[in-house]
Length: 310
Ligand code: CP
Image (cartoon, rainbow, N blue to C red; front, side, top):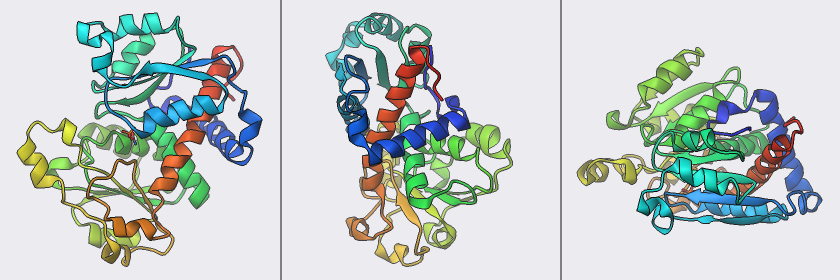
């Protein structure tokens, strides 16, 4: 059974297939309107979500399938103490494919070990968020036309931001990529990502504090929210939450074709005045999330039926 727990669970050729299929769905949505007829997607969300859960559900409905699930642990038998292993054994007989978001790192992996249907990690704690990464890659492919030779700045909460961890892993597979890691000392990228991904693949990178000084060299600026829910105390969150605020003045320092991406939700880190800048692509990025999830559901169901993913 094929699962997607980390973005690099797909080979580069499978990723190409996923992104090409996503772009074909954008061009010919009607062609796929019955592709998952009679198939059911379960969305098990133990942590809040707007985009991921609803774009998964929209994706399955666009494919002619159905959806079932829950949007908080409180409305599931997790509150009675049921393990994720038992839950997924049961859900395997109710649905054909399952997306799981969980506050604990590794929970979707544990589920995958006990599942007879494909499991998609829809975000696990501060660890990984592969379908956000596929969304980010589709956005970059569609709007930049390439992954190679890009200087990508990640700004904000690089410690807890699972979308950052996942996207660094995915982009590290392309030639000529450089990373500029912009954060306060307390929210630097975890050392395991620096050692096992960035340094292991000889990716040029620097860790800096200043967004103003870094922005002129970037092809992509990936802004992130400070992840309040993962802080141990509120004081630290309040001290760090507004470290970076992207505004029009800072955008004036950027390249004319720099893309501003953000996985959303946004709090204060991008001023609303930036929304009308043609380089601000975060709402387009959220839209792309539906298409890439449609493609992923189709490919995983195809593989679970014994047909090749590519
Ligand atoms: N980007 C993202 O994961 O958003 P949600 O938390 O709203 O799903």
